[in-house]
Every structure is written in structure tokens, then in C-alpha cells.
Image 1 (cartoon, helix red, strand yellow):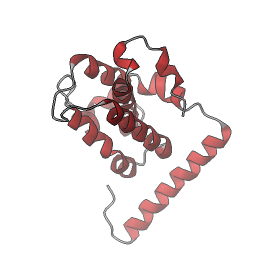
Image 2 (spheres, rainbow, N blue to C red):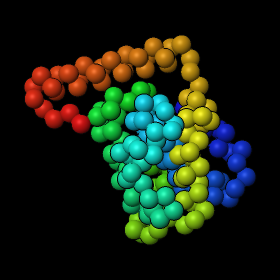
Image 3 (tube, rainbow, N blue to C red):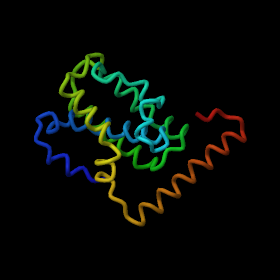
Length: 164
């Protein structure tokens, strides 16, 4: 995972751990919404994940709730690159918790909300591949990881366990 490019941003909000965490949270959720839309950016507005977001009025609790739901979304929608997305969600939460000491119910201020939205809107086109530059070995591992996820979902279906 390469996060070195985050230091290239000049905004003071992107210099803090909290701001970096919000940006990465936007990237994670943007990639998930994009994949829920069948990799069609025009359909992202209609995804279940997008409908849960209240851009401009989100509080930190909302963002953290969405991040804690990432494993369920990955499993329920057979999302590609599950390992990478999980690692990125973990890093986003680490950075948020390292940099945030206020009440989780408070609204995210306008600048921080803009950082989150910036990450969300540019997740697939600009930043996900910057964070995870592909190597042949990584692609092979991701294919295996995706197959393992499908196998687990099939086992759950056969045992009549709920699969989201």
C-alpha cells in the first residue's frame, strides 16, 4: 500500500492524520459504490451505499458506521480486491482515530466533508491504483482471494446461512 502521495497535497486538512483518514474513507467507499454500480460511474447514484450517504451533512459517526460495514458489503456484492479494500478501510480508521479527539456525533466540518467527498469522487479514476499499484504477484493473490470469497459464500448458501 503506497500512501506517499498524500504528502503532496498542500491543504492543511490533508496534512493531518484525521484529514488523511477521511480522504481514504472516501476512497474506500467510492470504490465500493463504483463496484456496486457494476463499474459504471453513471449508476453510482443508484447504489445502496450511495443512498446511505448524506454528503454535506455527515457526522463522523456516519462515516465510521459505513467503514465498519465494509466487510458485509464486500461479501454481499462479491467486490473485487477485497483484501486491498479491507486494508485501506483499516488504515482510514487508524488515521481517523489517531487524529480525532472530539465527539463522534459532531458534524464533519465543511473542509473535512470536502476532503471525504474528494476521495469518494476520485477513488477509481485517480487514487485506488495509486495506492495499490499492481504487480503480477498481487493480481494472482487477488484472484485467489476473490475465489476464496466466492467459495465461502457458496458454502454458506449450502448450509442455509445468510449471505448478504
